[in-house]
Each structure stands twice: as structure tokens, then as C-alpha cells.
Amino acid sequence: MEAAIRQSLTQAEALRQSILKRAFDGKLVSEVPDDWAVEEAISDSPTSSQPRVRGGKSEQLSLF
Image (cartoon, rainbow, N blue to C red; front, side):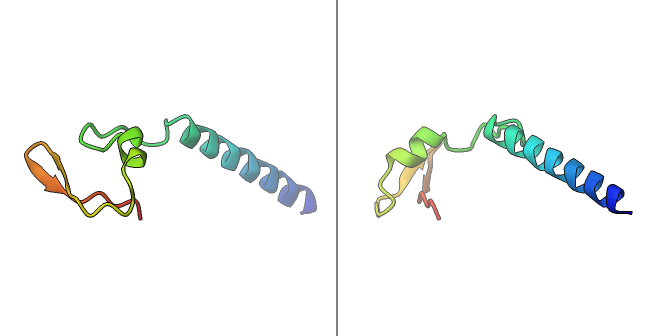
């Protein structure tokens, strides 16, 4: 029984590491063309009260 538990814990840790690697590589979810690029999101001041305009729509960028 203990061997089975140890094996399950090892498999769970390997799965966790695999998911984290895919997330950091950007392969966990598909890319949505209308999403903001990370560079655009972090270049704006989070305290900015001016809405951003994209594709004819006015949008308020929120990081939180």
C-alpha cells in the first residue's frame, strides 16, 4: 500500500512539473488573436484612467 502511495505521489509531481513547463512555454492554452499582448499590458500604468482604443472599441485595461 505504501509503495502505491509513493508511486502516485511521484506521478502527481511529474504531472505538476509537466503542466508548469507547458504553462511557462505558453503551450497550456491556445492563443486568442484578440487578446492583448503581454508587452502592451505591462507597458501601461495600472493606475491609468484613460481607456485604450482597439478595433474601434474603447476598453479599460485592468491588470487585476
